[in-house]
Length: 366
Image (cartoon, rainbow, N blue to C red; front, side, top):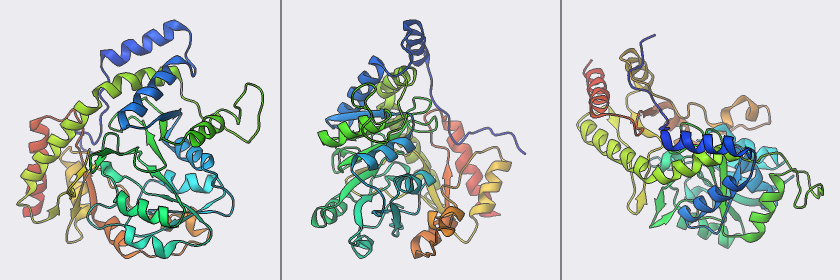
């Protein structure tokens, strides 16, 4: 195994975050407390929403948002199969059933033209995945949702600071859910956030994340212990202050890679549609001629980390095939064979970027 010189991901943790954690530790309030409230308010303001509800992971944020919207046994939620397992699994947690529709071949996000044919009398919500840091076509999705009286919950786990037609992701649907896992554009170590403008959804979410309790020791519904700690929130407050600079560096890195790989016929660089701001949680290329896995191995051999996100559609995962899923969606089935994510994080140097470009070009000439 070659030594990795350029990692696929690397969180930026500096003195501000370290000192903020120390301050919380010294305060004695290390569980959910005033720092969580501060972080919720700061993050909601950042995306332009009225309410923020912090959780202990992006997955629990999705679970709680679905419960807050009243999704449950017998319901259906339309979503993308080209995503991390948490998207579909969070729907299963509620007793509802994910309904998978195909994706846009350029942006890899859910294809709105495929949604309406998947709607049944059991459909209660649409969960678009704002994949890799770019929004889905939210105008088209919201129009379908309004016409069919459906709730829209953005899976924005990878899209902190992304924009769609001048609006921040997280303020486009009825609710949105973010992840603060260490590889994301900003982190709280582990953690999640729900944003919404709907007061009822916000209050419901707070109950479900805290053992089903709105008043201490009174439990009206089956809830969960999904609370964020003040330690995590303290990190998040400092990370949020730096998010725009982190994102700008990712965007600069993406532009440099785009230019460097423009004349490499083996790969297609990411497509960003007009009016969209892509914040590049992942910089994902398509590799032609069935060479994806070979290129991935060659990059590793030359010390460059990379990832395949995601190699198996959710409907082909054993969990889902055991539940009776038997799907084949044309675009998704092709995309999973071609996608390869390259390092894009804020710590990359020009030397790192040049090495990535050179290595890919060297492989393409072999």
